[in-house]
Length: 557
RNA sequence: GCGCCCGUAGCUCAGCUGGAUAGAGCGUUGGUUUCCGGAACCAAAGGCCGGGGGUUCGAAUCCCUUCGGGCGCACCA
Image (cartoon, rainbow, N blue to C red; front, side, top):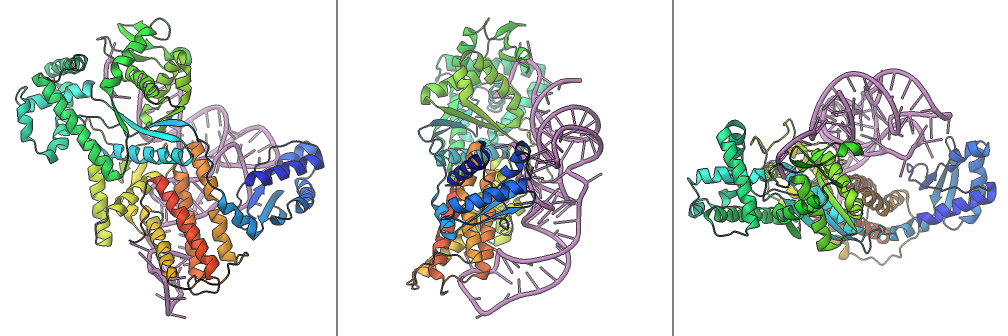
């Protein structure tokens, strides 16, 4: 639809001035019109003419060719051309849906990535919410999205936790695991990890033992050993972690389709890397490294001196494994930005021998979550806020404010607070502000939706026999104008994989509606029919947007 | 030391593929209610867009530089 107007402008410019340009229409402030372009300014130098002259000449031409749809064309400021659409043309724009730019594409979205044997912390909550929204965006654009996560069920951290667990059990006694109550399991393992990590750093003997445990865990996978006492403890605890993840995702409404444990990709990665020694990778000080310096980055170890694959080699295995499983056209990996340069190097290495997969992969880095006034959280030190604690303090803030418990409100509050800022920087989470029903919050939007639904419910019982008018009053027009931006905003969010655009837009939309609603009676008014249609469309857009964000849009609150 | 990211109102943030008087929310001050959900609306105050230089008709936006903060740089993930 918008393309139609752009093409008309391009044709007019060609006819008048004999030059071909790519016209891009933007959304100006409402006072200026519905669409605007600065082509006249851009052409000014090339044509040696005053931009306003160019604009005026174009306006004369366009008033003829666009007479059906455009009610007013003005030249303003230094030479902007502003188009105001006729009311029917504007309402026609409401039929435009987000572009299905990913139709037919298979996409793997990897996010969340909690590690078994470690705590599920606030950062996991954040990255899960972000990943979900991004996956939803790609789905909205028509993509077939597979949501997966990846977690370290092997590696040094497992060695640390296992070391402490066995110490706590007073030996390799898997039967004693039964003494740990199901509700305590996650916390118990998280404590064990901290214990193991401290021992690793402070105690040489423990460090040696942990190193040995790390190898034993790899060996146990290599042997597919489920029987030894050590193996029984390992598999039981790993299962505890997965059960905790399942419960966490169920609570959030996240649907992770497949868990990739590191143990499934370690061998593959190791093998792939070894095959490329002397080509892509080289041996250095007994380890296998990728020399990123030659490519403007830095050198990274892919296989340790002990012959174990590092995170880097496992990533290679994972990227290939995901391709074997899904044959994706595109792969998106959402992680914290501390992994940004690591990922750059890994993709650079893969580019050398499987270029297609490297190019199909997009890494989306985001910042850390900080609780207001808090410090960065580290699971190694144990001074960390768990995902559950964030949910709990938010529930508490909501209870104090509203006097009741409402899980949907709490989740809406957290998700919106996490998603409303542009990805990349750290975010500061303020529970009280997030659950506030005033201002730019999730609950505000949920309430806005409930309120619209309430109007529609009431209208069902009233008569709506008046014919719908085609022209719009000022307040109605502002609302329609804002609603027509929805598809464009979604397209932008999809193109950039940036969910915050949806948040910004939905909030502006709700504000526009509230302004309209404040001054315009709906039920019982002479314009009830046309206004009810607008309320209906508004509620639909609000809901669609909230769905993308993974936030419930309740009919009542 | 090298690399990446980030500095916008008291606080939290939009705006960044250059364009019209730099926008919201919270907080502060004042106002609005016969009536559809006031969890709202209206208004005011509050900004050398970290500093400096450059490119441009035009810079919060691009380039250089400087200061401040975050993160990453070999066998953790």
